[in-house]
Each structure stands twice: as C-alpha cells, then as structure tokens.
Image (cartoon, rainbow, N blue to C red; front, side, top):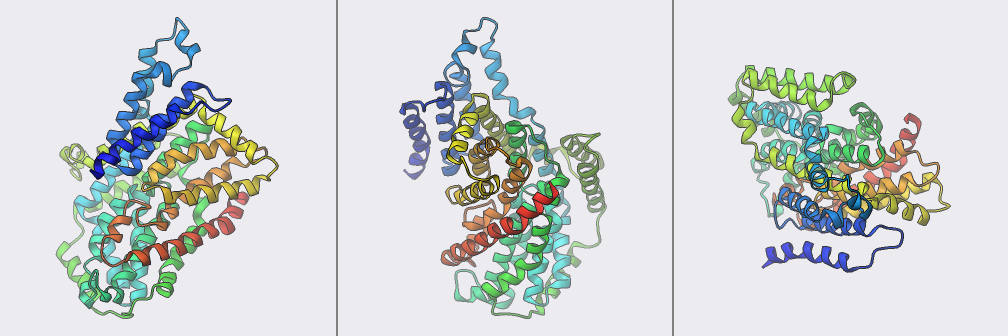
Length: 483
C-alpha cells in the first residue's frame, strides 16, 4: 500500500502541475517539461523504484511527447527539423557526459579498495596508533575518512562500506551495546564522529561525493563555467582543515563518551592487521594507480580529460589483475549510478534547453532587486542549505535546486559567479549532517542503534548550523580573496 502511494504521488504531482496555467513569460512546453521534472524529483525523494528506473522513465516520457514538452512549436514546424533523432539525441546526451564517466571510473577505484582491502588496512593502522584514547580514536576515524576521500566518490562506500564495518566492532569491546543505555559508553560518540567526518570530507574534495561531480556538470551546462579539482580544494581548504581538526573534539564536548581511555582497541586493531598480513602486490599497485589518477586530475587536465585519466587507471588495474572484468560488469552500484546520473544530467540540462531556467533566473532576480550581491549570495546559500531538509538524496537536491540557484545568481548584477558557485557546491557535503536521511551513509549510522532519533536531530541541527555559519564567516571571505 505504502509503495503504491509512493509510486502514484510523483504522477499526481506532475498531473497537477500540468493542469495549472502556464506562468506569464514562460513557454507552455517549458512548463510541461518542468511538471514532468518535478514529478521525477518527487520520485527520487520517495524512491518507489530505483533512481535509475525513475530517471530512464522520465527521459523516455519526455522523448515520446517531445513535440509538446521538449521542443517549441517553431522548432516542430521547421521542415528541416528532425524531431525523432533530436529527441533521442537529447535522451542519451547524459551518457556521453565526461563527468558521468568520471563518476563511473571512481566507483571502480572504490571496488579496488574493497577487493584489495587496502582501505581497511589504512583505517586499522590509524586505529592502532591513535585508538588508546576515545578522543584520539575519533581523530583516527576522521583521518581514515580523509585519506580515502579524494579517491572515493561515494561517501556511502567510503564511510558506510569501509569505516562503519571497522568501528562497529569497537563498542562491544567495552560493553557498549546498540539500542541500550550503554550505547553512550563509546558507541554513540564513534558513530557520530564517523558520519560527521564523512560529511566534512565530502565537501573538502570534488572527488569525495558523487553529487559534487554532478553539480560540476550542472554548473558547466547551466552557465558554462569550468571548476577544477584544485580550485574546489582551495576554496574549502581553510574551513576544511579547521573542521577536520575540531569535529572530533567538538563531538567529544557535545556528545561525550563515558569511556575516555581504552587499551583494548589498539590491540584489536593490531590483531586485525596481523590477519591481513603484509602489504600485497595488488595493494601496492592500487596505491600507485590511485596516486597516478590524483596527479593527473590535479596537474594534467590540459593534456588529458579527468574521465579519460580514470579510464586509463581502470585499464591498468585490469591489465595488472588488481581488478577483473567481472568486477566491472558485476558492480551493480556503479552501473546503477552511471545510468541514474546520466539521465539526471539530461533532465537538468533540459530545463535550460527549454528556457525554464532563464525564466526562473529573471523571476528570482526581480524578487531580489535592490539587494547587494553579497547579501544575495548569503540569502541564496541559506535557502539552498535549509531546503535539504526536504530531500533524502543530495543528488535529488542538486538536480532540483542547483540550476535554479545558478540562474537566479547569474541574473543579479555584480554577482561574483565563481564565488557564488563555490559557496553552493562546497555546501553539498556538510549539509548532509542535518538529518538522518541527509546523505548516503546517514541511514547506516542512524540504523546502528547507537544514535537515537532525538540525539541525531539535535546534533544534526547543531552541527549543521555551525557548518553553515562557518561557511559564511570563513569560507565566503576566503573565496572572495582567492577568486
């Protein structure tokens, strides 16, 4: 019954919007496209079907009804206009997007981490040397996520798939049990530090969160701006360093563990490392390959497209046996994300193609008329950040709101669009902390039994507000100086 309602609601929302008269100044076909787009976003939020299925269905519907949804009457009436081929070309455009391939390639890196167990080894080494005190163990978890983040575009894979399986073994050593008052002994603190750390690192690196890469494609398609890996890193650097150094301590103060010192954790980590044995050939090769990818992404973008660099590294992993072809073909998460993001890129670009974004930009700019660019930047950032409460997916949030925000910003005279874009984009990771469903690994930690709902919402509000304030107070002046 619940699934049926979730399946019908996106359709109902789209139909209601279709029945509403077209707003003044907007072409009818653009309003129809927007109606279907909103229905798709509602579907992504409710997820009655996998995101990739919703994306494909939306693209197919728009293509089938392209004379009324995708193209203007003037285009359709042109004798030289090949409607069938143009609608198909639009539908599959996202699959040729370099950012989509970069996302896919980075998922293969994550598969390499998992198969070789190199990610697990990194985390265990940090726990071994920093795990005696609960506070330093919090820093070990944070640094483990930080080391993995530049090479892992899925914070679900990084934190939920690598960090969580390790730290979930730690609380029982001290009688800290899930769904029990004893959870506060140490388990609650460790889980909160882990989810907070991955939100920070997701903002710190372009390649640390899949929606970051999607956002990059949307910025390029919406306003034609290219943002490099280096520029992203520099933009968030002062705030990122501050948060990495203070988040475990802040959690220690606001959500203090009962166990302060623990001698068992380093010994457990040492035993696990002994089970792993010496660094294997494949682990060494993986480390070399991901470092090669990072070097190419940072220094060689003028000679090789980042997505091609990722494909080069995947080829090297296949030739050397770090990965096998079945690891590629059997990676359902990678292929699902590939299809999902490709269709989302097409849908978001379609809003620009039909003229909806330009219309929305003019409307937003008129409402913000007379406001200084600085005030407008902060106001739009706060709105963009706060509306994440409405989304169970950073991807859906990015797809639905980023093009509109960019359109509004670009229509405001004197707006520094580079800084405005960087403010919006670097907020995508840290905003995930505000709800138990705000980012991929959130449900994993929320469902661990160590973070009760009232604690999660309270801490999410505190940390989320702090991150936003610091982004405005520290990040904004820094970006204005740098860009």
